[in-house]
Amino acid sequence: MDLAPSNRRRFLKHPAAIAGLAAAGVDPSSAKTPDLDAPSDGERNLHEYGARSHYETAIRTGALGGPLLGFRTPLQNSVGIITPGSLHYIVSHGYDPPDIDPRHHTLMIHGMVDRPLVFSVEELQRLPSVSRVYFLECHGNTAPSPLRPSVTVQDTHGLTSCSEWTGVPLSLLLNQVGVKKGATWLIAEGADVQKHSKSIPIGKATDDVLVVYAQNGEALRPEQGYPLRLFVPGWEGINNVKWLRRIKLADEPYMSMMESTKYAVIHTDGTSRWFLFEFGAKSVITRPSGGQQLPTRGFYEITGLAWSGAGAVRRVEVSTDGGKTWADAKLQEPIARKAHTRFLFPWNWNGEEAILQSRCTDEKGQVQPTVETIAKFLKIDLDYIRKSSTMVADFNAIQPWRVDRSGKIQNALL
Ligand SMILES: Nc1nc2c(c(=O)[nH]1)N[C@H]1C(S)=C(S)[C@@H](COP(=O)(O)O)O[C@H]1N2
Ligand SMILES: [Mo]
Image (cartoon, rainbow, N blue to C red; front, side, top):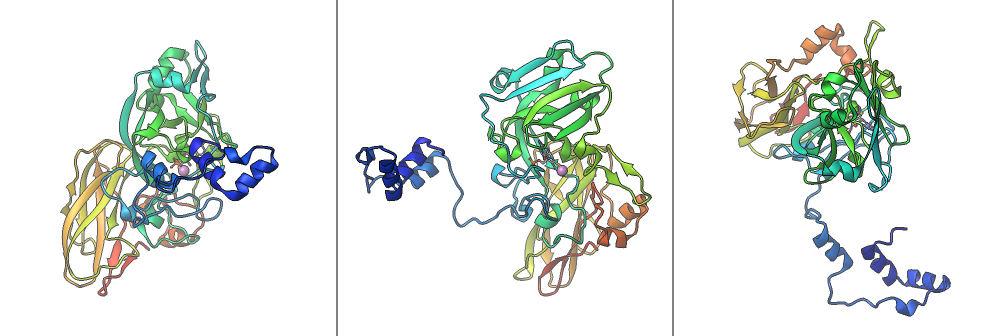
């Protein structure tokens, strides 16, 4: 049982708990009687570590294990570009995060190195640090599926979030261990029951990969990998190993369980692609969006998020007429590379049916495709995308929302 001071006070006030103490041979008169004028433990705790207003109700949705794999961020309520830690999406194959005491947790770097080293969390926190804003996304995000609802933007796009991450550049740690010539891959492993592990090419590792210990100004949340995670900017979520405990340098990828099974992409011709890393250009209108209802005709600011694994978002266009015409949205500054970028677009709804869409162009000039373009590229038809339970991974199609004349908004993708 957790007997931290605040919990202990609550415990002692409870008559049954006091009786329990007596039975356990502890003198119950040593328990303090409550001071009625003093703030309750609940109030005191809220001042010590805050909570949002009880009028605010946005929550993550979903459950692990079933067809709703992952807890999704309520993007329909998002503002700006930072996702609060409490609402960051979660994909953990082991379900519950391991309970790791940071005083006893270590990161070992070994394999093809000159000097294998073990770092404590405290030692990592003494090293030169960086803080950067980056999105994170599961490659299954947005994949259409007959097995789960795709009504709201939380259903369709909720497996992406964006935070300011703080940690140590991996390149700095690799310099300390001395990477041997011929080492071309690293294999990162987590301390969860499944020992989630992932092979990553060394070029990326020495580019912008971080070993992070903090998120949005506080320690990582347990669900996000407390006390350490690998952060691999712009690359599929699976690379970002949580509860990181080991990095091994090697001269080949390891084909670990997740990367060679669940996260391999199966093509219709029976072949499968094992390694795909960088996300393309993607965007979605978060408000107004699926499942919402416009109360009256008149002015609405259309707003949404755009991002790309390749770098910065250069341009977002919005169409309100089903793609006949497009106009540039305003991008909210500052714009960070490999981060969510908020776009804003003024709109007057005249009460007629409208189809709202956004289209992202990134710094490499990649333009977000339509679902038809994706189908053509993958040599599959729309019906396959609509009905197959085989996931179309890295799905970044333009997302249309249909507003009907009553103001009701529905997903108009397929
Ligand atoms: N140790 C460990 N790391 C992991 C996973 C996991 O199950 N265990 N899931 C991966 C996948 S598939 C994704 S999409 C991201 C999700 O990170 P988040 O839960 O912080 O959003 O973590 C990755 N890292
Ligand atoms: Mo994922």
